[in-house]
Length: 280
Ligand SMILES: [Zn+2]
Image 1 (cartoon, rainbow, N blue to C red):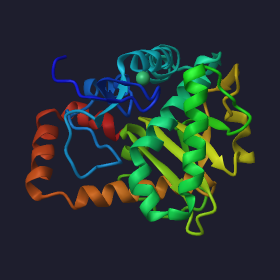
Image 2: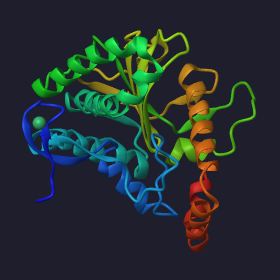
Image 3: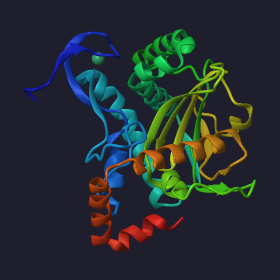
Image 4: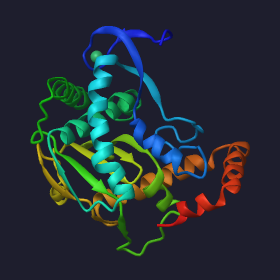
């Protein structure tokens, strides 16, 4: 507790002691560690680094951290764990779900901003605007689900419509990896925010503010969402996931042999668990 940094909290903007905040919520990391053949987490933002834990940065003061962790707990208990372990078919939710989705996308925006704005400079202004807007919604606990839409996508079925050759590590990526980034296109006309918690995705639209095809899984102020969806590889998000899986796999391939051997050895020691990872 004594070695905490003093600095400006990115959320309330007050000068306070800062916590080492997880970008990907801790419950996801703990679950993956508990059920993994290796205590290794492949994290898309920096997948070339073997991590015992996911990225933690001094981001929030204790009060803000506590506010976000309430929504994270609720998501873990009502959606993440029941979906993973109890065949969840439908979710009933209230205001905590849009608040969780917005706070998760907001954290990704903060984490990925520096790198992204160098690659896509024309979208810098848009990110600053949406960051301000989401920060206000989180602080006031008043989510606006009309201005920018957010979607909750469950990756339990992936349909290979085009019968194309899929990347060899695709299913491992779809089911197990944690990932998150700001998403755009070559023309720099689109802007989205993507977070993947094992096989659940939170997708936030900024520019355009919605995707018509995904309205069924839209997060509103309250409502119900089916926990069974088919992702087709010819759909927009399906294509993106294939490219992302290739990217993460390529980064893995660039790892040193020593790092790869360490992972292989750990898997070999625990073959039963490793088979479970291969199962779809
Ligand atoms: Zn704060």
